[in-house]
Image 1 (tube, rainbow, N blue to C red):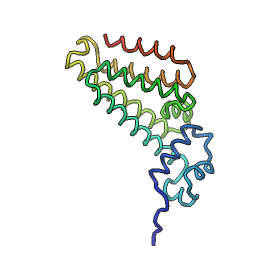
Image 2 (cartoon, rainbow, N blue to C red):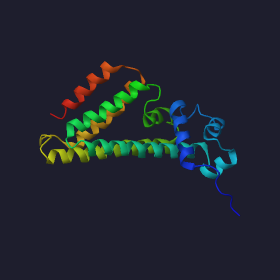
Image 3 (cartoon, one colour):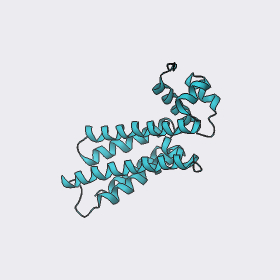
Image 4 (tube, rainbow, N blue to C red):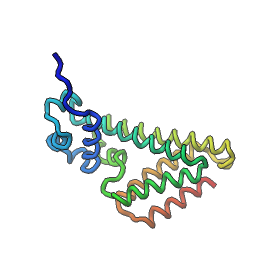
Length: 191
């Protein structure tokens, strides 16, 4: 007879995600995870299989949460420029509030180069942001908010790269003035 799981798996993943986010993959030991998640090693292996499998699950969870936040900003603000400003400002504020934490996807891209599956997850996450932004830019162009000579796909690629860059700048503690100046320049490419 199978034993019932004695812990909330979603809560455990969230706790593990927070630990990976704060410490990084390599600096987070299995013992750290077991303690943080308040589970035994048998339950851990039964639920997740390995530290790497749990890490990948955490990246997926983070990407889902961030994607939801991205969609929410564009749902709440109908016009392109205010929505982008809101998105970029929220990222800037998050990085200023906790620069050591940064962005889990950016952290993974710099910490897990020797993990092909993690690199795939990072690539997928970045491509999803680019695709979402391209769609928003195309809709804005249809509404007349973006000049017809602008290529929404190129702008989406630029903005996606810019977002990753300001996340790195935040982690490097470049400061408010640096990132706000960069934000103003980035928004001018829409003109």
